[in-house]
Length: 267
Length: 322
Image (tube, rainbow over all chains, first blue to last red; front, side):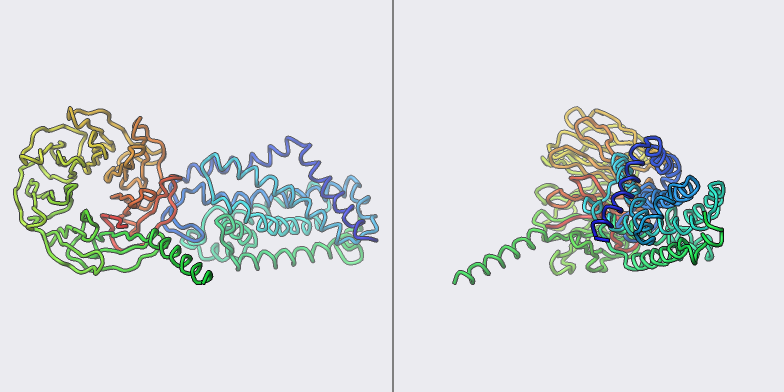
């Protein structure tokens, strides 16, 4: 197998995913509506709650909308990660995954391609979201929009890997509601997406600990710092480690001899 | 030879550049009885210097060599050398000086004595009080017109602006404005006087020639209750493009189009923003935030708050020296 073979397969998977996304206008719009409602409706009510203390990377007082924006970027990527896990389950049910898995290429490579595809779609959404936010007067330094890209890639991969890992556990599409309640909501609400750590600490020490060890928080912080031209090393290492762990677990989960697939009797 | 020359010009260029950017911001700290010295380019507090009890009003001499600081509880105005930062003299301001204004030629200083309902006129060179003018109850905001024709003094309780002729040092006219006028500022062309009213939450623009109200601008911020909107400090740029009003406990600075008087934007700064000052090139605007104990820096060109720097307790007045 040549490198060309690998590349062709990767393009096949990533291209299909991007094509599918662009074709589905409803999906594109609905993916944007969610963070925009949070921004325009939810954040509007909390306009004046922050602005009490200045915490890095911010150098001055900010409106709540400005604070929540990196959290909503994280939300876009979180839902995308879960969405790609949903499509994995769907593909498995519909049988199109079998076509993918019979490919002579190693399974880990196919999974990574799937991951890159999901991440690419999420990054596309993030930039459109940031574009709309710009006109809502949420404007970061220009270089931040470039520096955020590597952070988006890593965060997208991490959340995508989590989605893959979950999809290896889920047998049927119907079980996906459980993912919503037991994964997406806790990850999102117990994080720094909506409130800074110091604010969470004021209310509960336990919640503070949960939020600071939440990989989603670390991903959001990585994005938040990158958007303001700063590198958050701790968040980077944490997000990278989480990605590697989730990815290895997902690969094991999808390996026929070892993973969940066998236990479930395969599909 | 060539190399040396290049090096020399290079060094010179660097020197010139660093020189061009050098700027010092002085902030009076009402509770710390001190002034803060800030490098606004580096965004750092350099040092704090003890000056006297309850320093509030602050101004630079025309040549930028001296600072005048009203130490209210010491009942005097202290003169401080801007390079050595040592006190070099005092001006007899009489009781409780809070705000004052220097004439454009730097020869006279006009002080509001809030408790005695007076404006004290000081001859700066002689360091002597020349005259005390009886004004309304609780005089606060005071400003000398750039053409040195008028002194405008606002009385908080009388709700009035008194027009004092600088030649005769007599009140010539009075204009009634919205409740509790706090600060007054002339436009650079001396054609207009801007007055903020703390209780009314408004800005009144007066025509200097007729002494009549041109326009009253009500300041309102979405999501902020009306009683929190307490406009105080005013800064108007040289070209009269924009005027800026510090809005007290609304924690915002209003950006007002100085031609149409429309409020274009509200910029979020620290808590209880009180007074404002431009950088010498008018590219930045500095705000003192009394409760959050910091100053905020506004990028005037982009109308954005770029940084807030902790300076000490109850920052009140601010000036920037090139």
